[in-house]
Every structure is written in C-alpha cells, then in structure tokens.
Image (cartoon, rainbow, N blue to C red):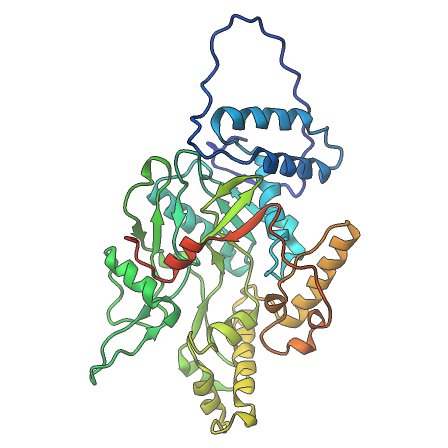
Length: 421
C-alpha cells in the first residue's frame, strides 16, 4: 500500500512480512545512484525507525525476521533523509500510539482503530475535505467509530500540512459589546482567541452570534503549499451531528437550549511513528458523559453553567457547604447521558468505562507490556472515589514508541496565538 493511494487500512493485526532477497553484488563501474541527502537537511532517526520495526515484527504472529526491512529502511533514510511506512506499519503504529495515550481511558479498543491512510494529501482544501470526510465516516449516524486520518508527514525539506483547531468541531467564543458598553462572551470562552484568528483570516460568524456556532477549520498546507497563509474552511452542517440536551426528571432543563457535538476529534496533536512525524492526524474515540457535563459545561473558564443549573434545581448557592456545585455537576452529566442515549449516539459513562479500562490494564499486563497512565486524566471529574480506577497506582507516562504528542506551536495557535508570530 503506497502513500499515494487513498486507501483505508482496517486490519486488526499486522500481516507477516516476507524477507526481501539480498541485493546482488554489483561491479565497481556502475552508473551513480541517487545522490545522498544534503547534510543540512534533518533526517529521521534511523535508530528510532529500527526500534519501531522490531516492535512491529515482535507483535505480528509468524512474522519473518525484520533484518531485511531494517536494512532497506536505513538505506532509504541515508539516501533521502526519511522513509515511507507500509500500510500495515502505519496502521500498527497509529493503533499503538492510541495504546500509549496515557490520558485516554478508552484504550481497551485500540486494536479496532479505523485508519484512513491519506498520506498523499498536502493542499489545504484537500486537507479540509478529508477532515469533513473523517467526521462523516466516524459519526455513522450516532454509532461513533474510533478513527484516525493520517495526512502527509513532515519531510526533511518541507513540513507536512497542519490543522490548527484543537478539535475538528468546536464552538466559537464571541465578544459582542453589550448595550452597557461591556464585552459579554457568547459561546465557549476557551475559543475567543481562535475565533478572532478565524475572523482575521476572513471568516464571518453567523449573525447574531450564538452559543454553539461551529468554528471553521483553519489549515496550513504542506510540501509545496507550506509557505502559504493558512486558510479557513466552513464545516458543513450535515457533517456535524449534535445532540440537544434534556433531563429525564426536569422539563425546564430543555429550555436552557444546550447541545453538544457527537464526535470528539482531536486535530492538533502530532502522530510520531518510528521517527516519522505526521503533524496532521485527527483522531477520535467517543465522549464520556463527564467530559461534557462536568467539564465543558461546568468549568469556570468554559460555559460555566453550574450556578444556572443549580438555580433551576432550587439549590441554595449562597454557601458552598450545601454542595450545590457537586449536585449541579451530577445533574448536568445525567442530562448529557440521558440525551445521548435517547438520541442513539454513542457515549460512555464513567463507571462502565473505568471497569473497561481495568480490563485493558489486565490485558496489557498479561502481554508483558507497560500501560502508561496520567492519573489526573483517567480518574473522572465527578465521583472519582466511586470508580475502581481511583484506588490504585499506575505506570507513569512514557515518551518512547509510537505516540500522539502535544505540539507547542499547535497548542498556542489552537487557543488563538496570531499566525504572524
């Protein structure tokens, strides 16, 4: 499978790789081969490539010895500064990167990750189109499928494309001036800066601004398109499945007009596999209800809805000792869980997902592998002590092997850092 072919890789296992025949000896006088890369170009770490290839073969039942593939890759790196993963290597690397994601509680299903191989894509409009296709393919009318779309990698002489949004779907944060001359944020405060950046690139938000206006995609091209100004692209409404929120016990809750999107597709992390870095590789699992109810809607720097919900519940908010924040967070989360279930949209609950994560730990230990964990992300934001993931120690996060990595530049621009600096 070549990177120029837009194909999907779905195999849960890496097929055996047959050894390549040793090259025949050549006479001394031959035509010169392709020139080696210029010394100033940054090359892929050949040792990292070899470590990855040995991992591929170690976890592939019946695989042939990896020496021939390692030799070929080392020669390719020496000649070009990089190398091209096979389709099977790419799929395996992406899945192991999910397996290594210390902040993800849903890793039990890492083998089933759907890998969309789009390594030929570098132009901004094509990148945006693949992002939209990713949303459509992963949403599946609510039966959310874990998916990663791998776009062109960085090359020694040119960067790959970039998606500057933190996620493919996020809501704008508007700062209209009120009749009293003050700015009041409408929407998600986290993305006020990014909203202004999108506007500076030419995006016009809906009028009047709303609380749940989907931000455009902001994309920089790769390869020959890399030096050009980032471009914005509207996300079609039919590619974004949203769930309107209601509460199973309180009819007034629906009047709050809340909703949330179905697919949490992270889009500003690098996928590093065997020394090759893919700067644009949006990937998603599915939501856990606490992420929406107890974080996105509850955090003071996000929608900050706890007091509004508490008032609807008739709670005393004058004193924190009444536990009004806790009770409002639980009811918000219950509303999310109820609404997604009623709409037939995949969502996990923190109790069930905690049990499934411990099952994943058991499988990793049985396979003789370490399972890196960031405790503060695995333990849910409500009722942590009531879940089994709270009551144990874990292996610390690692920085080796295939990995989704935070990119400082992408993180800054995803929050609104200007593109000019």
